[in-house]
Length: 144
Image 1 (cartoon, rainbow, N blue to C red):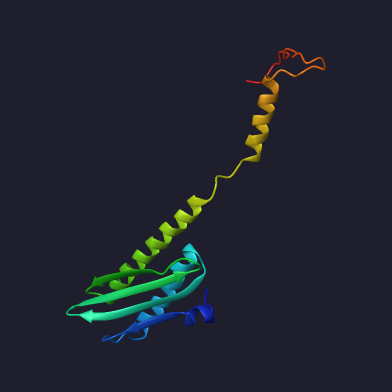
Image 2: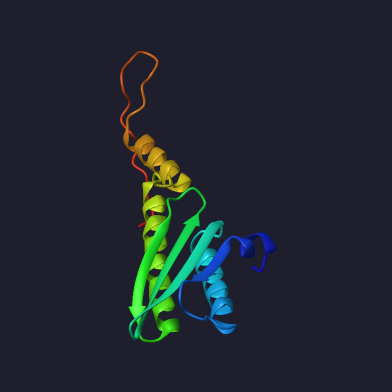
């Protein structure tokens, strides 16, 4: 899912940390993986790194489709672990949003179930005759 337009929507920033070459690539690939896993329509994403004493703080923001911005923050002594923890938190928010959208939909009506229900009610109800009286249903041998 390497699209140039999507790659431009992902920004990796740092205020006081040198990120090197590997971390921005790892961050972009991981963000694209999470985006394709849950919705696939990434509008914008960003990751911001900063150092506080001996720990790194990573803040990840992602906006997918028409959903509101999802963001999370994590701290760790290892910068990669801080990023992965923040991305996992955003992934969890996206998973919950997807589940909520999926559960909002009405239940699927099974066509076979509706047909079986109609057939079973037609077999048990007596049929009306022309003079307005009802005939008794005939005994039928139903498979067991």
